[in-house]
Image 1 (cartoon, one colour):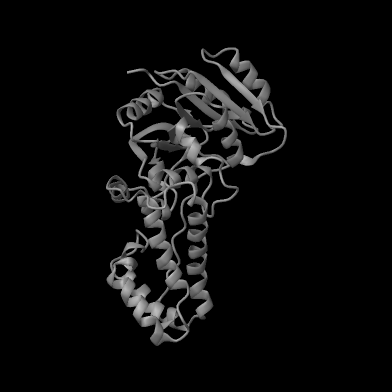
Image 2: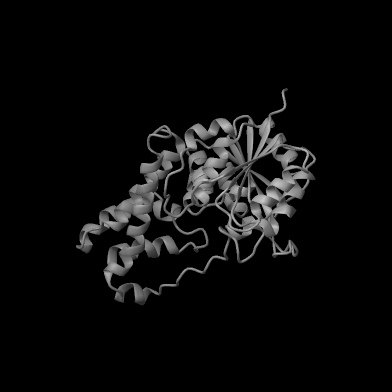
Length: 337
């Protein structure tokens, strides 16, 4: 079997402080890339000079593109991906560190799973000095064993709609996949470019995960995009549910409905309407449309709420951390509040 060619899409913006470490980790890969494509988003530090110096030292070609105006990280990654020529493209941040087996492990996986259009791995979350492998990235984004099992069984879109699990800098994709995923939308509510790639891949269940931490994810204050520990959800007591103004109850439901409607519109025309992920998306949209548009008359709310409860929608779309009683309290609140 012919070995696929490998591109790395690296985006930079004022990254001189950590860039050398990242490039050294690419040089140390067991399987070297065929090219590194760098798109710099108008850095004002020494990033470009450093890139030119490193390009003369590394054993693979580095092609450097300087944006004539600021694109922002979403469109900068879009440009970097569009300039890549490899069969497989690895997305790369400027401030992490790849373990030596990352490219070889993920390339082997893609060769062995031709149905996968993209795949993502886990990472060790470290401090600014790349020390302290105390936690894994998937723990931060709640991609736990239960979520992975649901993903593996085909519920990729359901898991993605609960929150992005895909870290761009831990992702490899086939260049052919870009014909569907690009151009990136200007805005995807609740997601950035990597979440968009995940949503597109989830429509046809062609995004896989590799259950290994294959890089060090550096956390520091200068990150353009970073992870933050999720804040616990606000606890709402039953008496508060009955006392609060109805508009306060409806606000998050209407926000969720608007988000799902926007994602549905963005994906429509890009992917088949009968794809498993689009069907799952439309079912979720219908549920939140019902909840956010219930009539003022409580008696008229009973039938649609009980119908969705019988269909299992309140249970299906409850927060993953909620207890068994939460779906029933949500249904009761929809009727009474």
